[in-house]
Length: 345
Image (cartoon, rainbow, N blue to C red):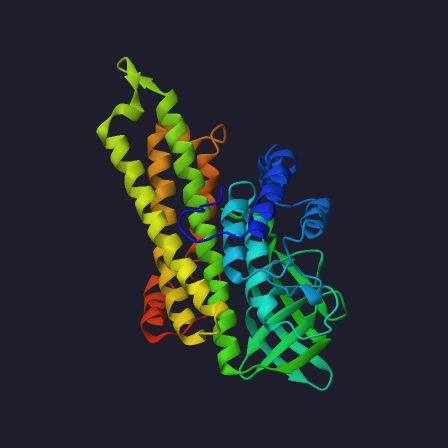
């Protein structure tokens, strides 16, 4: 679960992963497929996640958090993706952009969102598009120009339009949120802070893609060792070995680039971190998708059935691509900028 050989790992991080593994094996793995079919996570799962401190990884200890950096949060997202990818995404967005920008004294959970708001003396009007919803989230943090707007999701003037029957990441509870004079708090947002926050959002998606690809590759490896054709396991076939080797190599490359970007952001090198984060998301989305696709092929026709979990990894990884497409993400990588998070249409 924890790739200790790629980057140094602290004792605190090892303890965090031990807790995550125990919780995931007991409370998540047996139920994840059922939650995906229903498209909703039980409220107790979010409460348990908070009790473990998984939504407070990057928050300073004096603020009640765990006090680890963005790099530690990314590794948790990777690990959690093997159990419940939608929950992993929420952890990534909470510990990444939301934690970096949330105003001091903001009570209740927050989620990161994108959209166009019209602000008047009465409140915020507009729409938040394709937002990963959480019933426990009190605020949606929306960057716009030189301001960060915190929209009160539980107050009047908020109407949620859930997305039903989505292809993947169904438990992220995707929704469009229409606002009509909703309560909103505004704080200044410097270009540098916005750059760092949006880069952290890119890295949340990159970590999710790597985690899903790693999960699918492991499922493919296990199946190849068990599936016997012509008197021997298909894992002994060179073509299968090449597929697994390509996936592992590409995922490690994406993982290392993500870690380098996180280290830059943790070191307050926002411009460098933003450029690396855009590159990492581009590489991770491609690597994760290719790994899931290869694992599906290794399973043959069985990969297209719900009896084998690899089909869910393939569905979930599709959303790792940015909404504006890979070309725009590549341009961000060259320019050193970062944009919104979402999924390729």
